[in-house]
Image (cartoon, rainbow, N blue to C red; front, side, top):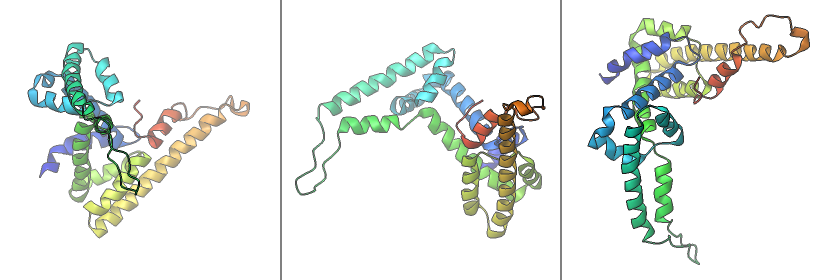
Length: 239
């Protein structure tokens, strides 16, 4: 089964001392995808064809630019802009779309605008990450059903960000039987709320420390409460 191929990265993420193992998986996938994109793969015709078509989101373009392989990025940018210019010239020659008719007949959108909108919604790295991440989600439930040690890791973890809590809540209903899902949901709710309340309390104490009445009190676990709180509430945040 394909899920067995991903048990190591899933286990590694749950072994990490982090606020959300799924965020850790995403972070690792992003690093791997950046390294793959800027490695020898950019010289392969198949990969270049995909990057030419999909391009990169602004977030990942900044990450690619921060890498040392400026020549590789330039080569990808050259063929990508070659394709964009060629495609848009052809679409621009067709003119704008038609306006809605007098009797409510809908018009057609501008081919240029539709092309750019589609281009702006795609990213080679995001796509590569998402495909593998879906397999990770499947693997989590594959292991939950078969691996008692993994179930204990889930129970002992520091919970999940709100977004990934929702992902696990929803997908568990599809991947597990009724009794298995009930058990999983009990554990999921417990680790999510217990750890959200833990971080919430740390944020509260962080705020209190700015009150002169608590000036001489210890910081406890609140010094890094803000970045941990951001991870809990925004899964796209990267430390």
